[in-house]
Amino acid sequence: MDNCLFCKIVRKEIPAKICYEDERVMAFHDINPVAPVHILVIPKEHIPSMNEVAPENAGLFGHMALVAKQVSEEAGVAESGYRVVINNGPDSGQVVFHVHAHVIGGRALSNLC
Ligand code: AMP
Ligand code: ZN
Image 1 (tube, rainbow, N blue to C red):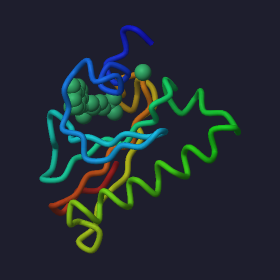
Image 2: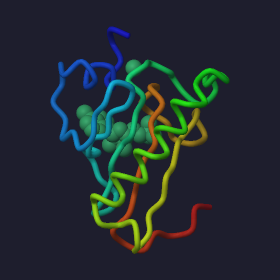
Image 3: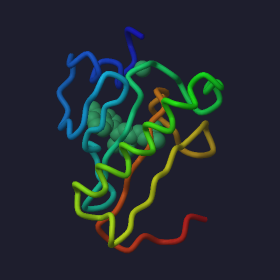
């Protein structure tokens, strides 16, 4: 996707603080962190939101969950706790339409709703 911000990060056209990368997934630090640890885990494949996730993406999303676990450990929040959030659509506040999981921790987090 030519104009997708996160596809540009995948292609290394825009710099990011990348903390994990393999052939399917990338993780990098959020540019506007809401907590001491705020990492985004994305598929390299352009999938706009959870609404477009298909059964054949099940392995990819399982892998993203394992990468979220790994980066939480490496960031030192696995024991203190963290939240994994995927925003979808207008009411969630999603602004980048390349699906991504926020890994947020390093402070006590308030209730979701
Ligand atoms: P969402 O509201 O779920 O779509 O979240 C998008 C996230 O992307 C926000 O937390 C932004 O701070 C983050 N973001 C936007 N641009 C960049 C960038 N160039 N590098 C890293 N994170 C970014
Ligand atoms: Zn994209």
